[in-house]
Image (cartoon, one colour):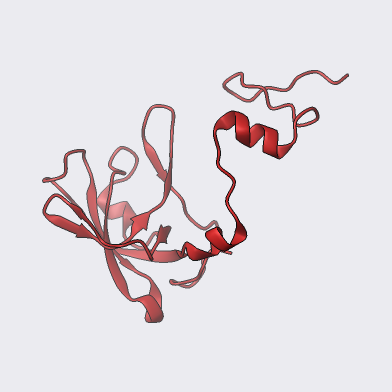
Length: 140
């Protein structure tokens, strides 16, 4: 029998003895259908401006994001101040959900959800394409 494999945090990652459904169930991940997934419009956008959002409860930036000709410009609030400075965000390609309803965040109306990943310590790393793609490109 092969040795159990662990990730960097010591969690069992032995995929030889568990199938994906078992791993998802253990992690509390709910399975969705393909029809559910394709309803989510995950699109690439290019950040054109980033500014501090001092009225936010948690430190955040207000982002203006260009999603190309068909979708246009959208704005969002993003709690990414731990890892990013406003000037390094301008021109960065990001992935966002563009078909959620608008959401009021304090005095600001967010029009899309910028996606990212939480580190264990709480910082958010943006979800970004690893190669240039045109703004508005849909995640497959």
